[in-house]
Image (cartoon, rainbow, N blue to C red; front, side, top):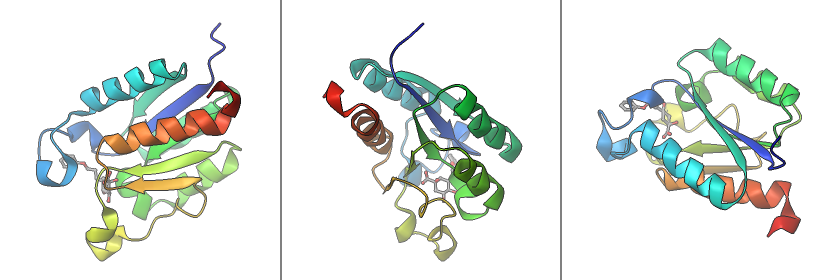
Length: 152
Ligand code: CA2
């Protein structure tokens, strides 16, 4: 059994389409490439990481519920469009006592007004937007320090 602290990364709807369209907004990396970068970072920090993407609200909600039973110490989540619409996903993350960082590839505040409100930000430890895939890596580094400060 791994003794490394467990972190789950959750990607919301349509993020499986990364690298196919709108590179000027979301960059050219595919989700697989981003997950690979995340896994490399986690390995360097001795964290047990698991990346999950779904286009379904219910699947993301159930994954969040499972996080508690799976002794997950930290969640990094890009809720994608559910950021701006989903009270249900907000309630799910509020129902588990697991700290999380909200990540967005694009700077949502430079975009349409409907992207300026998030159902997650007031619950999040931090919000990172506009850094592209690097935002996930910054979130993982933050999580590593937040859950195990003695590990450096
Ligand atoms: O900037 C982000 O990471 C977002 O969470 C991405 C969401 C958007 O609804 C949020 O406002 C901001 C959209 C993800 C859709 O990704 C696509 C990827 C390739 C082509 C089209 C969409």
